[in-house]
Image (cartoon, rainbow, N blue to C red; front, top):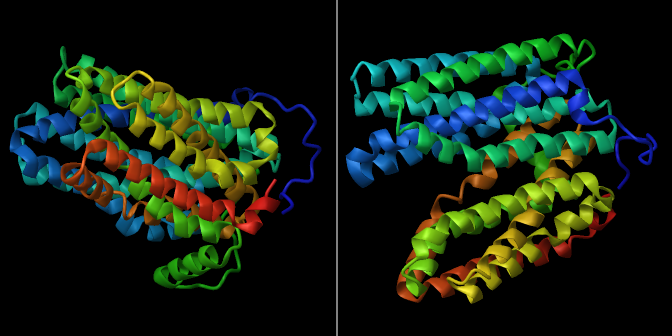
Length: 415
């Protein structure tokens, strides 16, 4: 399938961070995502004294809004100026987190209030990343290689802060209160809003909401987006396969400690290293797609993605608690990171602007609907059999999904 850009892909292009508007947005995202990690760690530890019920309620508060309103959020992204939407989202999030900080610093730790604010923050946050990804083509000006490089930097920042953020938050909580970390998060959202406003001044010719479209209701527009995805020759098979893949992959961090504990007294000490290896693999995969000829074979990356991940998870099951599991988890992360960039750039180049927000939102929300149930299923399997069997079952399910995409003929034509 031909790409949207007809530019000479062999021509050199400037580093993404030399584009001022992108640099501002990248810094804004990195800072605000780091603040998000502070918020999550601080709030989790705050409600931990409520026991399993409190933690379960918080988990639902953080996850359910993404699945429930993701598709409707995509309609907002497609119908509004995406840059202004990013700024308004950050401003509202700064206010919500500031209220949370006030409650914690003044000792008004009402559990229902904390959960309600967490739900509200999750609802508001749903639009941010899809809106940012839908906006990137305006910065790349249709240059495929430049866009892939920008995606790699954006998604790499998210993955890196996902590892560094919780560790840094844990250190800061030794010298500061949870309320103080909430203040920091509110400041990061405000800082992000300012940087995005400045980036907008560098983008006078950015994509605007399309005019002259039929005035459909929001739910009708959601249905239109789903029909587009289901019928698309490339995105359709991926969209139907990804929920089961998230169902399996989301279970790995929960089954892994059981694998380690079942075979070694030092299992808990290796758990952090194992998750770190997975994150390192993801970032390395994004860098590989950006810096090698893999960028010209995105279809192959998507076809082999879950086959390689499945093989890596099966090797983790076989390795047990040994350090051989570290390179195996890097192997799992490599195709995952590369495929994430490949899919994002494909949508940005091949999907029309008036549909792009709904596609990104659907991939953020619908594909994650099954993810919360994965740990329940595979941890149960580990209890009924052994942790190694449960990990192997995850690998088999990933390989099965990978086989389906490998046999998808339209993916073979994606460059």
